[in-house]
Length: 522
Image 1 (cartoon, rainbow, N blue to C red):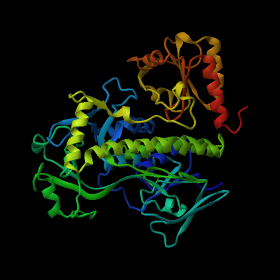
Image 2: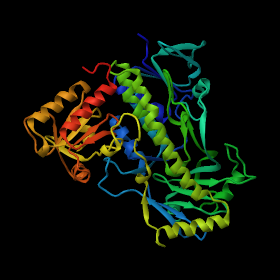
Image 3: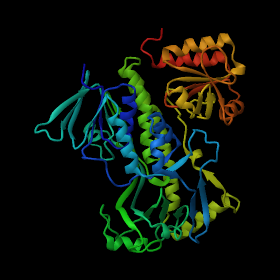
Image 4: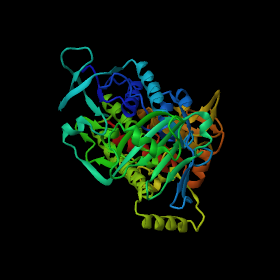
């Protein structure tokens, strides 16, 4: 046996999350990062309810709470300073059990993630350790690593390698995988500052997109006293990653003056829309920024990497544990590529609203957006912009395949809390008690057993098997009523395989998914 099942290159949020999910499942993981400690400055600032649900699965949600805050509405102001577009989050009840959007302190969140890794017996973390080369054959992968404190390069072996090593991914480059350019390339300055409490009242109280042709910019209300500015750089501006202070303060003068805030970070970036053409080469896979980069206008860059980790973790676990053939990993790109590409294109669309530099076209944009709402700007919801899975290990679209499974607050015997904490995050079938016979219940339990799945029954408890729940608010009940379905088949990453019109159809779905993912379907 090889010392490890999976080698992970990179210990950013994607790599750490993947390592945590694999480690919780007992997979032996080695993670390598070239830095001696986590990157101490903020980069991402937004996460969403899918991310929080993943952190919940890692047992970290409550530990992260002190480092996050609600994401405030985004107001797009046109050339005349008046509102042209407004985005907000859907109100309660929260469909996934968490508020739809948050801002967060990235270094603090990453510290919590790394502490979780240190508690997992099958995860070994190597910092200040640079992967110098990687390779593979029919039997496994290898990584040549210059480990901190060791005089010679050491070779590590595993069954699979996942590159979470950033936008400049050396692993991706060694594989010769090209990036598809979605035609968005804009230079911006990102400034993070800690603003004294007495100054906060003089700043905007919500997120603002200044869609001004002269110099588009963004203001973000972060957690606590953290505020962020994103400012488009024009011809002649510095593009240095370490932006010169003499150029910085004039750009911030609209909001703050020198001495009115403590600068945390100021860096020039190019906002890109890129996605890799291949996400897997046999035993080597890519995730996070190594496989896609998105402009920040939807705060979905880091979250997309976490989705990669969540999608990949349960599939790798099954393959490594001999429950599924390696072909299950083919569904990783099938599912994630169209999802992330659509997310990037949507973010680019918002970016093009913001980035218009032609004053005439900007004025036409303002008029067009106002007229689209009949002259009164209506609030749009960010969650409605995120696509569902379109292809891969899902049933037909008319059966709700690829939609996210709701997570209500539920009660069951002595339990009261979020559903995943009761049922776990494996395969689940959810049915209503009133529509379930004893014979059907027995058939579900038999069909779920080979998958290690759980039957969740919504309604009055019975002596028969399954987990019986009642809802604090009728999320699942309303879902069943709205779609006219009797059962949901849920994957380990909380996406619906499908929803059925009858128990017979649902049992057929279970049989089909078992055949699709299992080495032995008998």
